[in-house]
Amino acid sequence: MKLAALTLVAAARLALNAAALNPADVSASAGWIVHHDQESFVGGRLLAELKKSDLVPDQQEKLASMKEHFGFNPETDLTGVTLYGSGEADHGVLILRGKFDVAKLRSAAVLAQDFKSVKQGDREIWSFTADKGKTISAVATPTLLIGSSYPEDLAASLLVLDKKSPSLATPPPSAKQPGLFAWVNFTASGVKRPDFLAFRNARELTVHLREEGDSILVSAQLDTGNAEGAKNMAMFSQGLLGMAASDTGNPLIAEIRKTKIQAVGENITLESAITIEHLKELALQSKKEGKLKVGADVNIEVKSKEEGK
Image (tube, rainbow, N blue to C red; front, side, top):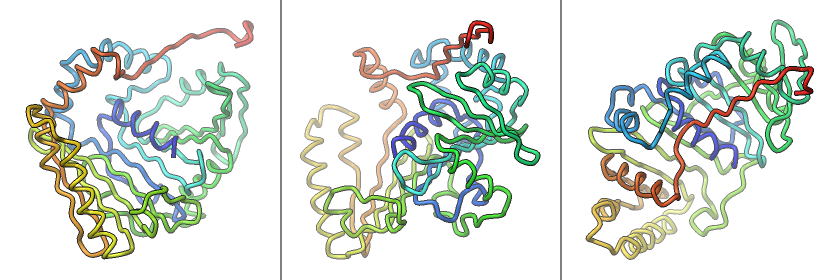
């Protein structure tokens, strides 16, 4: 799940024109999915505040540098960001849809350590060693960039895209809504339940974030598999939240105190809203204190093959 967390950060930083989840992209055996749909954010207040704040210094220059060296600009060329996996530790597939300059991407990949290329039908599969010695396998087309840390995961995902392996028949309901969503199926064979009481018999978790007006709305639903357990856990969580958010003089804390946690049958649901202004203030303060780093860092160093790079 570490890869999922990293991709959530990357999607939030970079995907500014993403599309809704395409179920045909995802394997039917997926145990978890993260998808970012940013169409509703384009022209919204959150994006405007990010652009005019100093949370993302020199961002446009960095994005332009990506366009120059890699042939695509995440701000203008991405249309979809999806990550999914079976649940096995560190396994997963990242799918980017948009407009890509394959020639420039290949030129950059060739300069990577241990670059190799293998033809598979009309596709060319690249592999190279990235940071910390991890091998990356990738395929690029003018409209698709797909990668994984495991060649077998990439191969399986290509079978899904080619309709030679079953894809997701029924996507989670939140996948059709604007914003960012994450979904975990705890009944999938590869998914490990967290070591908390509420997850002991859990079947499914969905988290959804979206912008509405001047606020970011957060909703979550956990299918606990037990109605009595859901009721008790919801009461405990609501009480714990009230104790944790005791600083009533802080406007952000005051908003968090309005979070609603309740039991609906065997499900625990959460609904919360935080204003974008308060989020920005918190982010700026955290950055000032050195607790937060925001941005798409692009450190590009191009060396020739003769230099051994």
